[in-house]
Image (cartoon, rainbow, N blue to C red; front, side, top):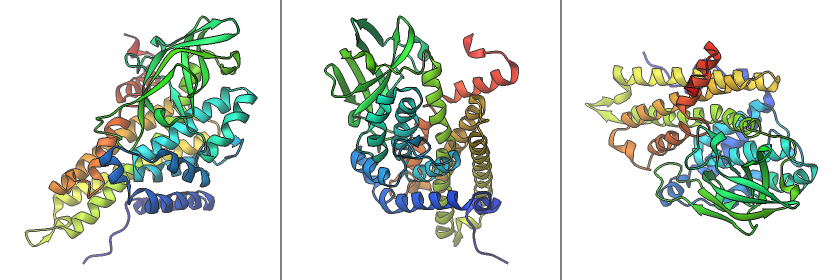
Length: 392
């Protein structure tokens, strides 16, 4: 006796956990991704070229940029709605979700939370529509997991600031109109709003990537960049500023990674049903069904974890350790799912005719950025023991 296959998330009746508005937002983003991203992203990935400005304007029209922020042209949605949007965007490609995440949860969030009213009025409405694109300069070539060691410095010169240094692995860098840059000052680490047409600012695109190829990744160089006193973000001093922005971005990753995993699993299920070996579909073999069942289990658990964290965030109760737990689990499980699905597709799993190898390669980066797997493991370990093992 056989029945009709069901979608992996239907095993836990996931839609029953969402309200009508959350489902509606999810469905709008899914329709956009199905129509605009999925038919084109393999070519963008293969050529390493992304129409970032065009996509930013389209996603701005949909209200996706800074969608969880209030005012200044932002949609003001719930955290859960934003997370579901990230799931759908990353089902298209991690690079597309990264564009939205860096724009809204890093650059726009920093300006919204820590900027002056002049900063907000100047940049946020244009960033919400996609007219202006932002990037976030924290990571340096020698300082990823330890941003407190950054070498980028800002020195006062009269009422101005002079910025020198560099940042590495910066999403949107070469298409950005504004960069939020963190630098050492005599008053500790401070953030600066830097228009990218300021003399001395250079963005160098990073090529020859094997991951996130449908994404703009750059090195930022600051050579005597002169900024007015008003460029400094007045609302925060020290690492708590950039780290709070990273928590916002990591929250989106908790949801987003499950979108990539879901797309891989749905592809593998459909392929296994259609692909015959030894006169029967490979889906009919017990080994294949065990793989599919295990992956569905991890996907469903990951989505339940993401949704729970989203509800906590909407209640104002979420902690950085909880976000680390979500990023640790979901990035790890998504990558494992992508690798297993690649195997189910066999030789076809390594071609861009199917999305799996693209997701797999992208997730290698997601596994690392916004806090490595090791660092999130140690954050959770510290929460459990009270001992910060990463400090030696």
